[in-house]
Every structure is written in C-alpha cells, then in structure tokens.
Image 1 (cartoon, helix red, strand yellow):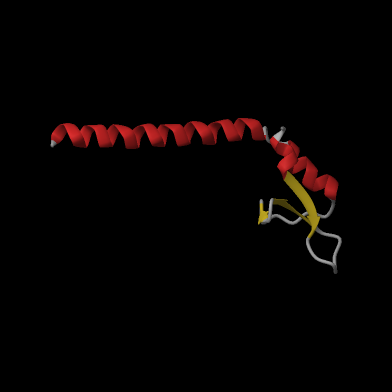
Image 2: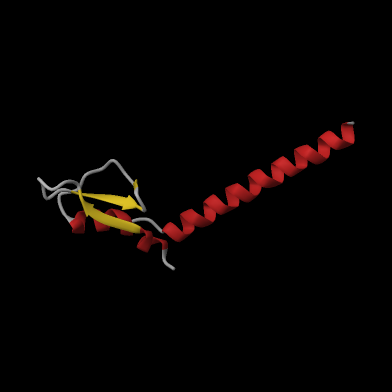
Length: 77
C-alpha cells in the first residue's frame, strides 16, 4: 500500500469550497486549500513511505535504548 492513499481530501465545511487533508478521522495539517488539486500537490510533495520508514527506525531505536537501560540497571544491582 502506498501511504499517500491514507490521506483523504475533504470539504472543510458545507458553506465553502475550501478543502482540508485528513488521515483517518484526524486533521493531517491545519492548512486549508482552495482546491483538491492544491491539496493533492502537498500530499504528493512528500515520500510518505520514507517518512514511515523513519518513524519505524526511531521506534526501534527507542525500544533498543529502553532494553539497554533495563540490562544496564540489572548489571548494577
């Protein structure tokens, strides 16, 4: 799955033609766009798969650090 597909462009409200970008039920950005094309350009400007890989790597690093702390604390006891 291409993560760009997770983003949805929706009307901001019933009264205007402005659109917003959401991911699931969450606002992806506070930016408001005048057209769907403008919003899509913002989505397309980023390699979201690369962003997801970075987040995953940070999560793994955080888990490794926590495990290292636990091991270190056990050795000190």
